[in-house]
Image (cartoon, rainbow, N blue to C red):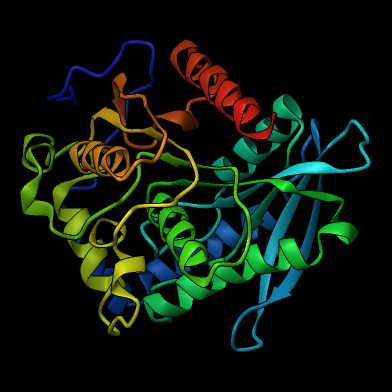
Length: 310
């Protein structure tokens, strides 16, 4: 079926999930089965361009959180580090595309990538998800010597729902006055639950990440209550004294305008922001690694990372 949006011809075709009832699939266990499939697929992942290691760290409640560590093949005494908070609507675990991205970042920028498997909205409150993500940050800084990480060159990265988590952790870290961060990269990020404020939410309601899916995502994520609202929903917080940000919205995406609004709010708070709207793109477009457009976008991301860690 032909798309109603003029996506770039350099990208493979995508579909919209606008008619899927996610809440029903949470109730009947379908999403849990899909999540299990993704986890099994990732558990056997191998990379030809980075060394991959699986480990655990402890979260705030002493529960073990699995993470994957991607180390460049070139040996260094200390590595800059990316903490990668993955997307998936707060409902899906790490997928192969995130593993591929982590390998590419390690190979092309020399960073060590940490990809944590935080607890999901299928069975945990959003505050638990947030604290799992903070636990990964804390673990890296408190074990930097053992992990061979340069504590002065650590930055946050997140795509989609992971962008929301990365932004929230930057805020939480600021207010807990803990660890130095050299940047935050937010890729087609979720920023706000007040969807009606943004023209793109209606204009691209049937795009790859649909209005219907977005609304259900927020209901599911917040369904068990929220204590740390201004960290769970970054747009509701004050945005001063944060690390420099690279924000990458996609042209044909329901989330485009809230990402732009978040970038502008950061700028108004005195934060250095590089806003880069990708023409012709859709939510999740960067899984198409063979696309010339995606390759150009990754080159820009590598450039941003090198600037953060210089």
